[in-house]
Image (cartoon, rainbow over all chains, first blue to last red):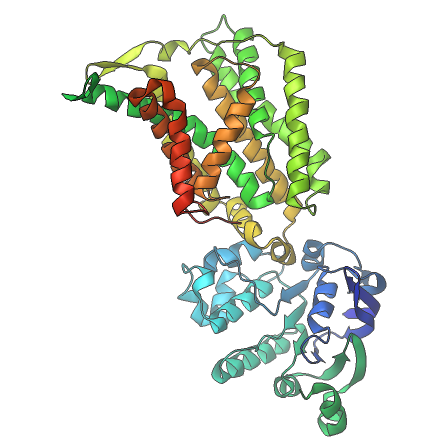
Amino acid sequence: MLEVKAINTYYGLSHILFDVSLSVHTGEIVCLLGRNGAGKSTTMKTIMGLTPPKQGEIVFKGDRVTGLPAYQICRRGVGFVPDDRRVFADLTVGENLEISARPRQGFDGWDKERVYNFFPALRALEGRRAGVLSGGEQQMLTIGRALITNPDLLLLDEPTEGLAPIIVEMLEEKILELKAGGLSVLLAEQNQNVALRLSDRAYIIDNGHIRYHGSIEDLRRDEAIRHKYLLV
Amino acid sequence: MELFTGLSFSVLCIQILVGLSKATILFIVASGLTLILGVLRIPNLAHGSLYMIGAFTTYSIATAFSQSSLGFWIALLLAPLIVALIGLIMEQGLFRFLYNRDHLMMLLFTFSFTLVFGDLVKLLWGSDYRSLAVPEIFQGSYSLLGMPFPRYNLFLLLLGPVFAAGLWFLTNRTILGKISRAAAVDREMVGAVGINVNRIYAAVFVLGCYLAGVGGALVAPTQNISQGMDHSIIIEIFLIVIIGGLGNVWGALLGAVIFGLTDAIGILVAPQFGIIFPYLAVITVLIFRPKGLLKSIW
C-alpha cells in the first residue's frame, strides 16, 4: 500500500528526517512511535506532500507520488489527520465535511450521512462553527473530514493527544472499526499504550532516524528498547 | 424644518442618500480588494487601476453602441468581464508563481502593475478627460422630500444591497465560497483534503478583479473618466478595507458606508474642508479599533 524509501526532509536548512524508510500493507495498522520532536509529524507531512522530501521516494499503491502536491496525494487515497487538528474553524461542522467530500464513482464510499452514523455526536453539531467545538469533538471532525475524502490509507497523527480517557477509548474502538472495514492506518503516537493496543507493527523514530522496526508482540516484550526511546 | 442656517432636514436626507449611493460603488470595489486580500493574502495595489480600466472600457463600449439606448448596459455587462479577463491573465501568468513570497514583495509587484496599467491607459485612451451620459432611463431626477434626487443614484442605492446579498450567498452558500473561507485561514489543510487551492485562488482573484470592473463601469456616468482616478480610489478602498477589518466583506460594506456618509455630510457642513471628514472618521476608528471594526482575517 505505502512504501517510504529513505526519505530526507528539511525545514529550510535544518535536516529533520534521515533516510526514513517504512511501509504499510493493506489492512494494517502500523504505528510510528517516538518522543516529542522525534520526527513523527514531519514524516506524516512528508508522506502527505506538505513538506516534500529532498531525497528518497514515496510509493503509494504502486505509483511514485514523491513531490506531488497534497491535493493530488489526497485524491489518490491518502487521508490526513494532523496532530494539531486544524479544523476549518470559521466553517460549520457540516461545511467542513462538505468541502472535503471526494465522492468516488461507482463506489459505495463515505458521505456526510455515513460520517454522522460513524460519529453520532457530530450530527447534533452540524450547524455549529468548528472553532467552538471541544477537543474531542474537533478530533472526531478531523477524522470524519479525512474519511469523507474516501481514503485507502489514513495518516493519524497523535489522534488521542490531550483527550479525556473516555474519548480516547471511544476513538480506539473507532479506529479498530475502520481497520475491520479494510482501511490501512499509519498511526503516529507518543502514547505507547494506545499504540500497543491498536497496531500490528511498530516503528520507533528518534532524532529523525528509524531506530526500531518489529511486530507489536516483539515490541511489547522488548522493554529495554521501549525504555531507551520512548520514556521521557 | 431648519437644522441650522441654510441646512434643512430634507437637504440632509438627500445628501445622506447621495452618500450611500456613492458608498455602493466604494463597497463593490472594496469587496473585490478585500476578497483578494483575505483569501490570497495579496495587497493588490493594482485594484484601482483595474477599476480605472473598467471605467475607460465602459466609456469605449458605450460610445461604440451610442446609437442604441442599450449602450451603457452592454458596457456594464462586458467591461467587467474584460477586466476579469485581465485579472485571469495576471493571475495565471504571474501571480500564481509568487504566492510564497512575502507581502512586501507582493506589494511592490502589484505597485509595478499600477505604473504599467497607468501608462497603458494613457496609450490607449490618451490623457484627455472622457465623460459618459447617464443611461436614458435614469436621466433626470425624482422628487424626494421636495428635493431632486438623481435617478441614477437611486439605481446605485438599490444595487448595493443586491451585491451585498450576492456576495453573502457566494461566500456562505456556494462550495467555492466555503472553500475560500477555509483557504483564507489554512491553505495547506485545504490542499490536504484534496482541493486544488490554485484553482480557488484563480477564481477568487478573477472575481475580485471583476468587482473592480463593475465599480469602474458604474462610476463612469457619474464623474469624469480620467487618468488618476486609479490613485484616488485605491486610497479610499484601502482605508475602507482597513477600517472594516482586512479580508472581511462585511467590513468592506461597513467601511464604505462610513466613508460615503462622512464624505457626503462633510461636503454639506463645511464645503471647503469636506474632503477631510472621511479621513477623520478613519483615524477615529483606528484609534479605538486598530484592527478594524469587524474581525480581520489577517
